[in-house]
Image 1 (spheres, one colour):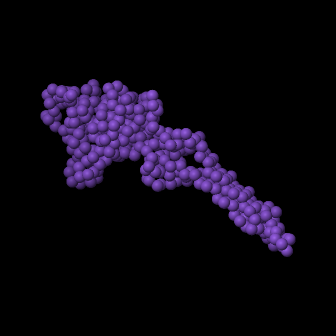
Image 2: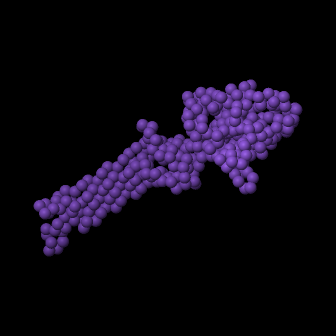
Image 3: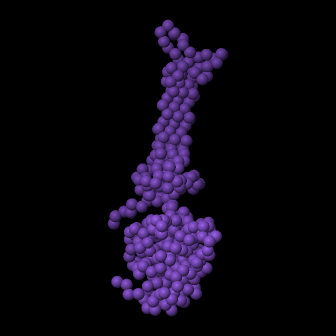
Length: 356
């Protein structure tokens, strides 16, 4: 089985450079046998930086680069010549990467914009040469400062996908199929749980050449916030989405209960997710008749809801409208009320659609 190219977690040992040592040299020239001190300063040690780049979408380029070392500064030399500064090291990561300390788990930084640069480790200062210690009573100092040591730290880098809409649902709820029909993304699709083992991104085209980014997150199961299944590994990708699109199949026994379980898992993982805008999509409506969908409507939670069928291309335009309205809620709130039931069940057939 081919190993996935999607890597969203790496641990890297980083070390900045140490400062160069100051020189204790004395001036020695012809006819000047007892010249004064002229030792130069040591160079500065190199820093370690983290920089966001839109040219990367995964951390795979760092998977086998487990050590990042900046170079040390050179020692000072004669004629008050300072040593060369150490070279900095820049770790380039995708936008949306979070850095934490591996030992304490402490948050270090978060880079979300292209070109944003944060210094992770500072290089040691170079030592001062003996020329700085010359005084009226000590005109020949035979000592200089040593360079300061560099810093070392083990860093955990975690990628959290940046998307406008994040698909949330249990395994085999039709998330990948929905992403494939609404965008040019080609996620793996099959009729069994946990088909999706890595997040997928797709750009959804909207009216007037507008668009938004949709992320397909691997299925969540009950207990995901406690580490069960794959949920804990991928729940962090949901944190960066502006809008959550819950997907629940129309043939689910208790839609409200399934929505409650999904909402509970998100809240347990991060209470801040409770405040995110959300939309509910009832998927696979081509497999249900009109009476069943009418019964489903009575069980819906109080959030914007759309009935869709990805295979039958049904309700997708209405879904795009609702998603765009929710993504731009502040703009639309002043003009018209958000529609919570955008698809009339009377438009659905009495019998399941015969889809080839």
